[in-house]
Length: 453
Image: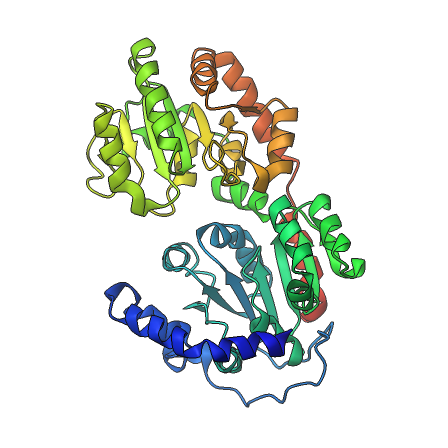
């Protein structure tokens, strides 16, 4: 499979070169493309200095342990914003428990790398753009980083990347792995392509038992598959401390974000195209019955902020933007900045989780649950199916349809006692899920015998 993949890449190289050349004409990509080709790693400082070029092993079977001289290097890779957020508690756990280990974090998207630099600079020795999966590029980058362990967060599987790591005997871990029904069908249909990649992984640490079972059904060795839980559980409570929003904290937050300290606040997080129309329509109707109701709208893609602001204007809603003026006040705020949504949930009376009224797969409800806030979401929570089902089961969340959104939000906003019970149930459930980071560190301990994990 790897030979065929690289042969196709070579055949397509003239087309790829033309596309890159065209992209280089745009300022947005001018710096990022050379970085993703492995240029400039020498200038990243002592953490990415050249090492002796390793000889490739003849086998693709990853080894269970790798000898190394201190300080060891762990290479962690995250695709985008969501994966960076998931990786945060694990990276902090590695830094706390193994202070002498060097951590290199690679991120594929520009926004993900920006968030990583804002959130994780204190626990990473280097944050770099993820390399393109061209064989010479991957060999060069691995040579520069010289990792003793590689950790892949959730997804972003690439053949050459995993192939070369396995050849060089570098243990590679998938952490926070998950498989949606669509991905499972895709993996089975193209098993000839995906199975060789998955077999390069030393261990696959899945979020749920269901995810682990799907990996076993694909034909992978059950001994390499572990169900360790969702890192987002520890990310949520780790970020918010004890998860409870005291009245003073809530009022202070609301004042900082330009909201009335006493009026109810509805936060809609990680929304997608098609959802804002429904949410703004519902909000406009509710304002007739709850004239003091406030709204924070946080799109998943902040590049859509201008279009959403225009949509709000079309509905007759005055909408201020966080990126334009942080001192401005008013009942409706468009949160068009990176990395602030989790900190906003403690000031909410009710949270809606986006990507769920449209067939996107939903987003993480754990941050709202950690803030002791009742949650509602649409029917499309496939990417968080187990988490959403458990929140519904413990009466911490409500699932809505586009036709029931208005009535559900109205009922919850008019029943403070119900919101309080749901918020407490959400927080209690999330607390019961803790310990995911420690389970991951225990699995990594075999490769770091000098560190007490």
